[in-house]
Length: 207
Image 1: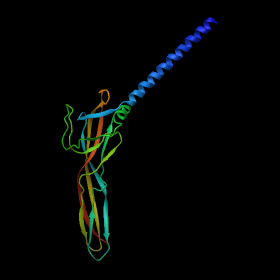
Image 2 (image 1 turned 180 degrees about the vertical axis):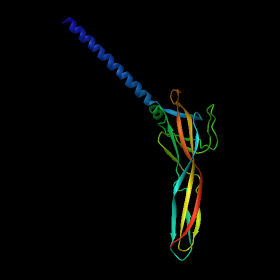
Image 3 (image 1 turned 120 degrees about the vertical axis):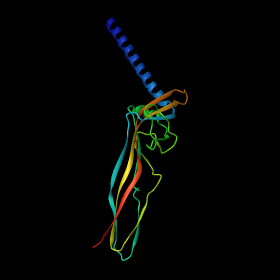
Image 4 (image 1 turned 90 degrees about the vertical axis):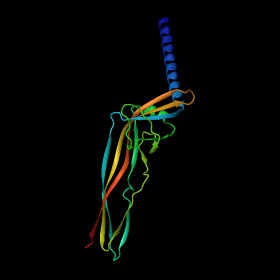
């Protein structure tokens, strides 16, 4: 009986210790989530990354003029063009912890090459949300093409859109507001940016 009581006391002690350790672990997680981080800086490097040119053939746009008079039309070939940005990381949990506050940051559009041997900073150009979700960056220019369609003719406008796909490596540094603790997160980033539009206009008689 004495041995049984002793075993029960030991078992109860182990349970108390385990519960206490679990509570401490949960408290540590809560403390981590309660921390408030502020973005300090984002640096960039071309580290095993590349820049590619992507050409997109857009389905032909056509308009018929079934009247006896000339008809003017305006085509906007870049109306549906989408520039995009997306960040990637191997530590999604840390990224979400650090980026709880939305931050708009400058990203490289490929017009100036990034160094391959050290991180550098960008202080101009397109800005986008620091997010793991794909973001769309609006075009700064709009291209329009005006044409005149003769009577009883069809206008066909074919065009090819060129995009620059930029792949780079980022390093974001955050500071905890209350303690001054600094944390860094690195990962990959991909952005797509409009370069040019190549269009061709054809006229066909409607028979």
